[in-house]
Amino acid sequence: MLRWVVAVGALLALPAIASAQDADAGKNVFKKCAPCHSIGPGAKNKVGPELNGLFGRPAGTAEGFNYSDAMKGSGITWDQATFLEYITDPKKKVPGNKMVFPGIKDELDREDLAAYIGSFNADGTPK
Image 1: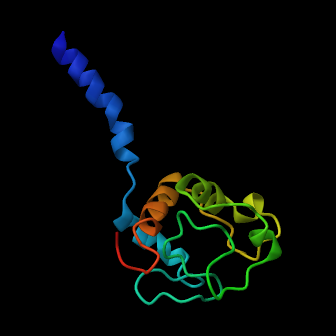
Image 2: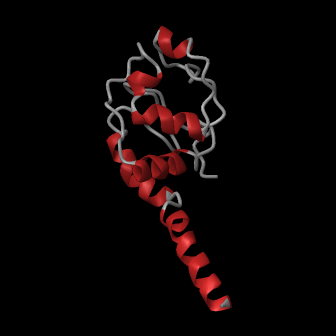
């Protein structure tokens, strides 16, 4: 009986293991973002703001980037949950923002991307 309980518990844990965030995989997903955003040591604003230290930062506040009024007035402070919602459909989350990217529809890609972005400090060094 104990073996069955252990086996069932292991099977139930598989979806959680399969959906664990992977920052290394997120680095690959970030290639979709890289034409407009940079991250890591020496990151600079491009068409979009640099993303170092994104989580914990109020939206519309990356130094030297000209944000839309919509983003500046969004009231968002970036955290993982807000980012995941935003990156699914940026125009839906913040109507009127300048980002033309249609979003990332795959949940695992979004989670991996969030893990990758969350792996950098504000100065671009890895956490």
